[in-house]
Each structure stands twice: as C-alpha cells, then as structure tokens.
Length: 259
Ligand code: ADP
Image (tube, rainbow, N blue to C red; front, side, top):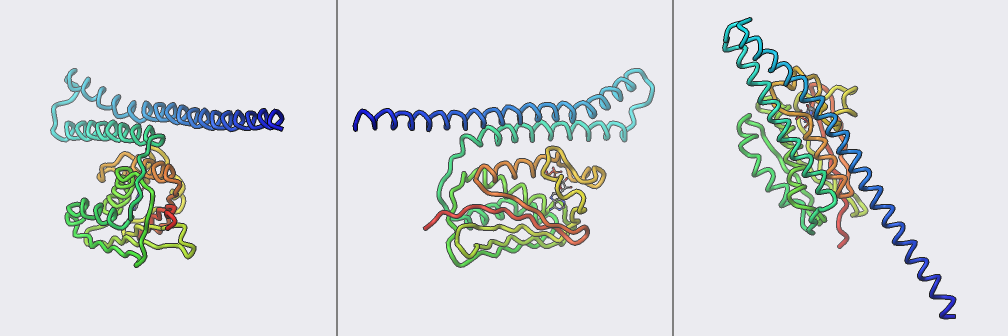
C-alpha cells in the first residue's frame, strides 16, 4: 500500500506546487500589466503640461510676448503640478510593489486612527474643520501593514479636508458588523460632494472631478487609486456615497482578526 500511496501523494504535492506557481505568475503578469498602463498614463499626463510650458518658454525666448508675472505664475503652476505628479508616481510605484511585501502586524485599529487624526490636526485646524471620532466599545483587532494603512487614512482624511469649506465637519465612525468578522471605517464630510456620474470614476488613476474645481486643491488624482489598492491588498474594500453640495462618505472595510 506504501507503493500505491506514495506516488499519489507526490502527485498531489506537485499539483499544489503547480497551482502556487500558476497563481504567482498570474499575480506577476497582473502587476506587469498594471505597470505598463501606469507608464502609458503617466506619459500622457506629462506630455500636455510639458509641451505647454515648453512652447511658452520658446515664445518668451523669441520675444513673442513679455515676461509678465501672470504668465510666469501659470508656468510655475504647471511645473508644480508636474512635480506633484512625479512624487505621487513614486508613491504609487512603492505602494504597488509593496503589495507583495506587506509587513502586517496585529493591532487595534482605533489607536492608528487617532494617530492619523493627530498627524492631520494642522490640516483641519487650517480650515477650522471640526473632527469627530466615534469608536466601538469592543476591541478592533486587524492584521495590517501600519505604514500602508496610515497612508490610506491620510489620503481619505486629507481629501475630506481638501474638498470641504472652512468650518466644515468631518467624522470618522468605526462600526463592527454583527458577526464580528468585519470592521467598517466611515469617513464622512459635509463638503462639496461628488456628482453621481463621477462616483465610479474617482478611484481611477489621475481621475479628478471637474479639473477646474480641483485645480486649486493641488492633487494629481492618484490618492484614491493608491488607497484602494492598499486596502485591497489587505483583503478589504473601499466604497463611496456622496451627494453634491451635501457631502461624501468613504467607507473602508477590513477583515477583523478573530479573537
Ligand atoms: P486628488 O489628488 O485630485 O485629490 P484623489 O484620487 O484623492 O485625487 O481624488 C480623486 C477626485 O475625487 C478628486 O479630484 C475629487 O474631485 C474627488 N474627491 C475625492 N475625495 C473627495 C471628497 N471627500 N469630497 C469631494 N470630492 C472628493
């Protein structure tokens, strides 16, 4: 029976290994595709402002128009936008690579949220935004890469500040589901909101609702993309509900560690 049994077990082991290899190569292929799309998008995003600045500089050199401060200001704005884009790009490449090297620790989510609110205190104070944190009485143990999860909540909360009027309200509400399997973190603002037809696009790379309204808020449209990818790497998800002129609610869902 040993002789009969051994090969079967060997085959099963091989099958398992083959399955794992398949799975890994699928992941790598997906990462490769994602990088490729990212580079194409980046090229596209960089080309327009670069050619605008380039042709304006050329016109200046050729003496077509004078050195008006207003024109220089526009160019500086474009260059600042390019710089932010490149910085965000570095961040997203880090986040992307890190999906395969998360360093998860078991910890309570509430102290992490408090830490993020503390970090962002100057941002909220700047606009006199009132922040409320509501937490459950029960513990909220999660398995997370602390730095990555801080980045997720920093992105969501700085958006809440960015897209709110001064004196607004931002709430962070944590909620456990009945079964104790999942934690929801709602980040709610009473800011400008998002039009319904834009809601499914805001998680796309470089997507910004109505460039004119977003222009002065100094973003690049990568914050939510990074947040979504990081949460998904933790086997969680992000969703959004919003009403124009009323406010937005972003919900991060994460699996709880069983205790
Ligand atoms: P950005 O760098 O433009 O802030 P994000 O990826 O973080 O990029 O967000 C994408 C777009 O979604 C923003 O440009 C903005 O129009 C919209 N958005 C994100 N968060 C909010 C919010 N809390 N309230 C209203 N609009 C938001």
